[in-house]
Image: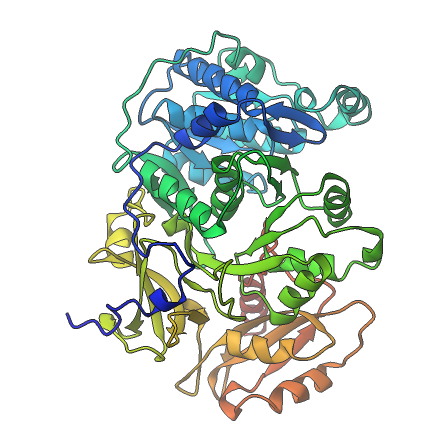
Length: 564
């Protein structure tokens, strides 16, 4: 097939000293931690609510958890669920599972009982590891009754806290603590690690053996489990590491507020932090005041987040109380990074914010703006080492398009998944001749930088023409009163479909619906004209803070069904 992009135009934009090619890493994922344990055993590894543990201590706990899992019958190929917020328990369990050749299945703690049940059955996990927090444990316990899960390992949150905080937590939060009856089916984490830390060695084929089953967000249908091999995950961690540039082991501090069960945080925060021998400051959830206090007091240097978090910091009413200048480098992902959010955060901190891009199916990062070189605003950057990107025809996923033309972004590289768990038809539809169809629409400029327009399934068909929600959102973001925007398609008697916008105003800003529609109308073509607009106090978001359309789509559908 004639490929007009074989010359890799992004080569001219590559950071100095970085090769365009990178072979797959043929090391298991747990070597990420073990290598750092060997290099900096006494360096701080995790800081959870003020309780610090070194690399050597975490390495020992991983070995003990690995032996404990083997004694409970978990062996190579077994699937173990993690339903945990950011905490030492997540890091220890993750690497222990992988060390014995088992597979990690990540669960969102905010899932409903039905969602937990569906994913547990679909992945056929043999065990779930969770916290003794009632809100979480009760939900997990109820869901597991309808599955084939044999055991639940229960981690005591109080045990992970510093002595004083642990004492106060047990007193003032006692009504929120679950007290499961410990038996053959319910195992305490303390008993799991009560051994000498000598797990039986397991042979792992990094190129073939599945390390993670990472379920997609399910915004366009039933979530599917992306099978990520050890090589997929290890390679992506190395790619991000190379992109970051020179880092001295033991000197950096990562602020980890995005949840590790999300693939972006798993790679760009946890694995990236550990591969560099850095200290990970763990926060179990995002609370704006807490994040600012942590930055001010603990001086993290690297901060991976989503645009809404950076925007929330930018707009904090008492920002001058906090010193944010320790931050040197940020990776923004999960959603498009508005220009004003990026520039304001950089001015506040003096750091470099680069926008990256990826999917669960690619472990996840495929592209990023260079940290050393041209950082094009509005672009998701250029491909990582070893990654190739093409723009394909929207009607023919095998036909490559010339630079500058808009089409579907497709990618291939050593971090692309092995396929979907138990879904060969979906796999065949998503991976064509080794190329991953991303479902995103965009174009590539003359320097190899990629600019996204929209999701294929979000495209609005107005009078037979394609309207991209991103185009309408970008126009509305130009209005100084607007803080956040989501645009979806709604039924329209005349046009078939039409754009509807949902906006949140900035604190203290005022604007009417008519004013905002008029503002957009002056900057959009007639086909893109907004049919409806709502001003809301808050817009729906995913757990990692990414603006979410699916709730609004469902709400509009229900509203129109009632009026029909």
